[in-house]
Structure formats: structure tokens, C-alpha cells
Image (spheres, rainbow, N blue to C red):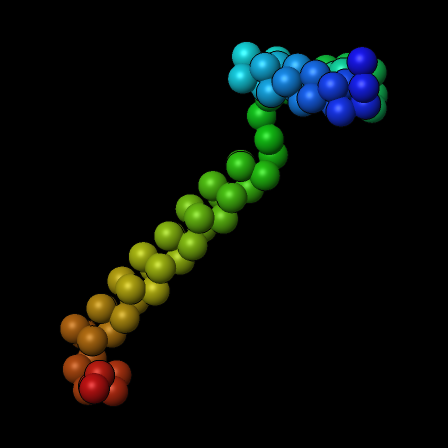
Length: 79
């Protein structure tokens, strides 16, 4: 068996393993020795940040609407 045959065999094995959904390499244990949970904390912080931005926009919009209704002429006209 030549070197090119060996490399072709490795590529074929890797492609078939990838197509079957087999994990690549050997799984590593978690640093603490325990398995990690499936939840990623970054997703939670992103959701929280988007919720805070939405609430801040709603508060700002409501404040500007109340100012324009209760004290006409205080805010400059747009455009």
C-alpha cells in the first residue's frame, strides 16, 4: 500500500464518519471532572440584554410621547 492509498483511505474514513454523524476525535472530560450542563450562559445573557434594550426603548418612547402630548412645543419638530 502506497502513501497516497493510505491518505485516500483516511480521507474516505473521515468523510464516512462525518456523514454518519460520528463525533470527531475523542471526547474530553470537563475540567472539573463533572459533565457540563447543556445550557450556555451566553444565550441567557443575550436574552437579558435584548429584553433590557426593549424595555428601555419602550420607556423612552413613552416618555417622549407623554412630553409631546402634555407640553406641546417643548420638543423640537422633526425634519
